[in-house]
Image (cartoon, rainbow, N blue to C red; front, side, top):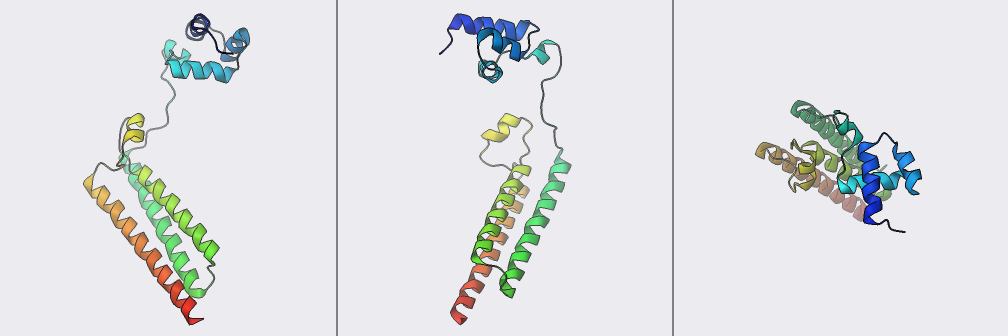
Length: 167
């Protein structure tokens, strides 16, 4: 059953101005604590921590240097995974199912790589941006890595087809 505007206004007053917990507010109005939190979030209500002069919670900010270090580590892991797949392909240890799993793993790592390269200061801006890298040099690096990965997969596929014909 939906709440009327007057009840929502009373919930807001309790949420923003009283010392009642979210659980207590929920019990008072016959709603769950998660429902009360959702009302507050959707309504943009003042958080209790803000009212008390504390900073709202936010994730730790990662510096540009840290992001680049993470990107380098991811690049090494991606290259190591691709090398392993190539070696297993040459030795015949890599089944089609394992190749598919490996390809999905590499694809998800590339997605993580793109996220690490986002350099926006505003977290909302990060979500809105279509292109994750603002620096043209970084875009070139991402494109180079993607081309290299595509070339490696093509080599693996050619070997697979050659082995299929030879059997």
